[in-house]
Image 1 (tube, rainbow, N blue to C red):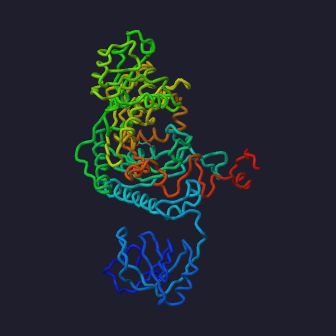
Image 2: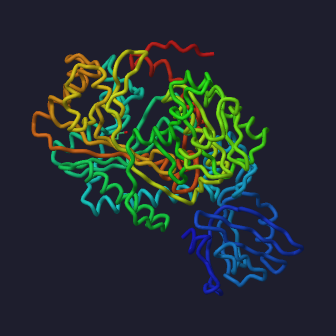
Amino acid sequence: MYRSNTCGELRLSDRGKKVTLAGWVQRIRKMGSLNFIDLRDRYGITQLSADDNSPKEVLDIIANLGREYVIQVEGEVIERQSKNNKIPTGEIEIKLESINILNPAAIPPFTIEDQTDGGEDIRAKYRYLDLRRNPLKSALSLRHKIALETRKYLDEQSFMEIETPFLIKSTPEGARDFVVPSRMNPGEFYALPQSPQTFKQLLMVAGYDRYFQIVRCFRDEDLRADRQPEFTQIDCEMSFVEREDVLQMFEGLTKHLFKSVLNKEITEAFPRMSYDYAMEHYGSDKPDIRFEMQIQDISELVKGKGFSIFDQANYIGAISATGCAGYTRKQIDELTEWVKRPQIGAKGLVYIKLGDEIKSSVDKFYTPEDLQKIGNKLNAQKGDLILILCGEKKKTQTQLGALRLEMGNRLGLRDNSVYKPLWICDFPLLEWDDETQRFYAMHHPFTAPKPEDLDKFFSNNQSDLAEVKANAYDIVLNGNEIGGGSIRIHDNKIQKRMFEILGFSSEQAEYRFGFLMNAFKFGAPPHGGIAFGFDRLCALFGGQETIRDFIAFPKNNMGRDVMADSPSVIDDTQMEELFIKSTASKE
Ligand code: ASP
């Protein structure tokens, strides 16, 4: 028996017991003739002690111990002289009778402490050492708990967890596929799933009624900050449902997770907002509604007063920052620089200070009454600062959305312990791309148009098509999309028309999706579903911005595993077997 107890377990009530513990040496302290060792395992830390009266072998071994050595010890649980109320085992220590070194350890490249001295790169390279630290341990245990509670809730609701294949036929969902060459089928490739979308729909055709899977998905995208090429979804699908059924079910899941994992009770229904409203008033399809500061279109109030920049602008919008009328010249200049950064891309910033006097950067063109009218439109009070951007409508709204979030940060309105989930509904079905001169599915090609828009959907008029709304929804939490889904097309005519709109010839549609369309001939029930981004959900529940800490072995921003150093080149023989010619030059 390696151990009788873990390092997180023993209390004062265990006093007098003889125990055997095993773990890693966290720290060794010598105070005169007293020796203390902190022994660590996943469950906690227990203090070990030895003094002049301890066996000589014990003292000899202690003299040669190093950090992170793996040891096994025997001794008696005794009450501590100076207690540590910060850890649950802080009232006891183990009076050592024997020590056995199970494995020595090289000096770790950084300290295994909550606050480590190791930079990001070195910690990534030695991920298994980083994972020994408490912050990562609690992140992964939170992840485990969320997965467990998800399974409990969905099982209660009669969902079945069913695995779907990883080696599949390429099914585009808007991103690039990772492909896998097939040795047995020369020149042919599998793709790794971007999501199990088609399979979960086929499970509905097969009559499984309620499916879920906590599943890895793969997307070969240029990695923006905090994206992973492989990530996990809680993927779900239900039969014989309308949008309302799906929203209720997964609002229920979200509430269950808040309650069971964070002990937060959300009683009220999640607000619902249309995509158009979100874009118009939050400049984003994932609004952070922890604070108001809504964007308003002020075009009508400012045009025609001789200020040519506004007169020529296609859209003029504003937000009001509460209590910021006292901003100095310097602070305003700094904000102006902020909106002009390439990431935001505004040309300039106009302000109105609703102080004792009303002052603005466009006083020449507007009377105080004109400016007050803008204040009224924004519901601004005395003491507030109005910030105005103008330009092309969608772009400017997005810029205002970013500025709104920035002001929310500056004003401390985005508290990580406050959670405000909501649903965004009524997305456009299609997005026009100027470059390729074609429509793309905003969600994916299997999303149903809203029934009331079917006429437009079958029209050949491009502007009609652009107006068709999708029966799709996203769940948003504190400015992050945590999930999205839709009611699916289950009618072959509609699915065929969708492929046609997306520019697939019937042969192409047949080649890529023939299996799905064929299945729809054999009794497809009406169905719909959703997928939650599991990594992001975990990070948000953990009150963190980055998902990387919630994944045991993540990739870096270049999609590399810096610990194992992959991707890497493969042998020529492997390449030949796979019928791939080497084009990469090897140094
Ligand atoms: N498959 C979709 C996605 O990965 C989610 C869904 O429609 O259920 O975004």
